[in-house]
Amino acid sequence: MTERYVQTLERALDILEVLARSEESLGVTEIGNRIGLHKSTVHRILQTLCYRGYVEKEKDRERYRLGIKIIELGIRFFNDLEIRKVAANFLGPLAKSFDEVVHLVLLDDGEVVYIDKRESSQLVSLHSKVGRRAPMHCTAVGKAILSTLPEEEVRHILKTKGMPGFTHKTITDPDRLIEQLREIRRLGYALEAEENEVGILCLGTPIFDYSGRAIGAISVSGPINRMKEKGTERIGEEIKHAGLEMSAKLGYGYFRHNNEG
Image 1 (cartoon, one colour):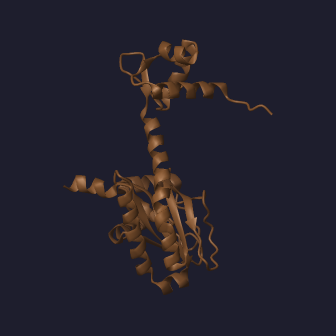
Image 2 (cartoon, one colour):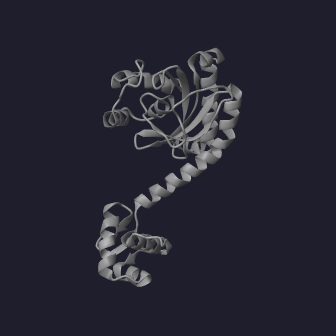
Image 3 (cartoon, one colour):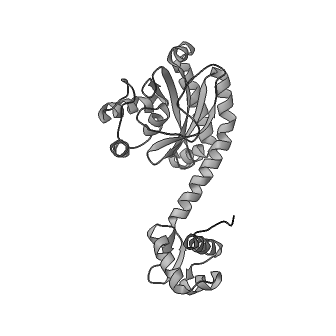
């Protein structure tokens, strides 16, 4: 069967690729000549791309270049690839050290997305799976990331996403959670006991990129009694150390050195 393509989308991508290959901004006629489109069609598509931030129009000139949105997507793609590559050297050893489930998540639009997972050799029933999204207010990885954000941003996320209760231990009051985030920030890791799943305890720590922003987190999860027997403080300190090492490999140490010096 012949593939069907969306013509307008193809033309928009052609325009983006032409702008990406050019070392200078281009006019509507130049763009049209390079991809064989009438300038009225090019102009119409450019208006949409400019509105969405993928293309920028120069002031006082009908010339266009790639917009900041393209850069944001590129950085996000790079971070996604790089963080998986870096994390691969830490997730396995952590899972082996504690013989519990280890997760890697990324922050996305006020939620966490599970992008990697290492299983335990023991029987553990968890809702988590790669690709699944989860709220931030009731997960150790989410709270670890929230602890790095300004209070105003935290409150915005909580208001936008809500704070639904998943168990009787879920924190659903913003002020109470923000108070807990202060302690998490001091410790460097978050503990979540049966706030998301009954019977499960999880500890998480943030991962920072080169800009000093928390882009994700790692965690260790398991049955609450077993996790307590292994020592939550010991687990928390070890994942915090792993998180800082991962962050350093993503350039976080460089950022701190150049902003504290």
